[in-house]
Amino acid sequence: MPDAWQLINGGEVSQQQLKVVAKDLLKAAGEQKLWFFHGEMGSGKTTLIKSIGEVLGVNEIMSSPTFSIINEYEGADGNKIYHFDLYRIKDEKELMEIGANEYFDSGQWCLIEWPEKLGTMTPSSHFDIRITTTGVHHRKIEYQRT
Image (tube, one colour):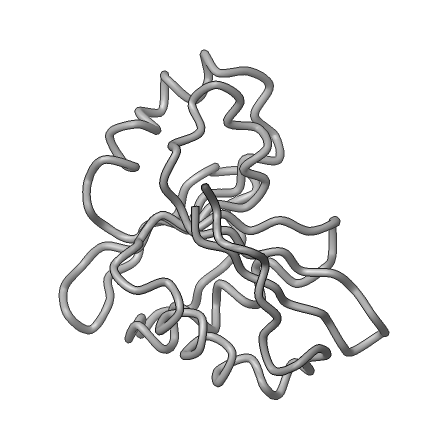
């Protein structure tokens, strides 16, 4: 059974606080490296993922993989960080063609935007992050371990 949703920073978060939020999320996730990011278009999923990458030691510029579907980075410890944007995925066949399950089973970081597109391929164990826009420059960020 999933844990209850937990708020980060007691409620609203500004962009200037994202590095601290990223550290808090990494601590809350424990050993879980499969993360799902939920939120409307423009809610800040990619921006938060960039902050997480920065905390993990990614030295290159991280960008949204909207057209490539997956971007690969390397953290300071040599582990891979896979950033997925599944917005353009039409069906599970496409996910199988890109080898999604192999990435998920790799033990490497998998940070996934639009996880709703996974359908029946959704792994049962993952770390959920929900971002809600509360103002022009503020978001509510919640997490849940499943």
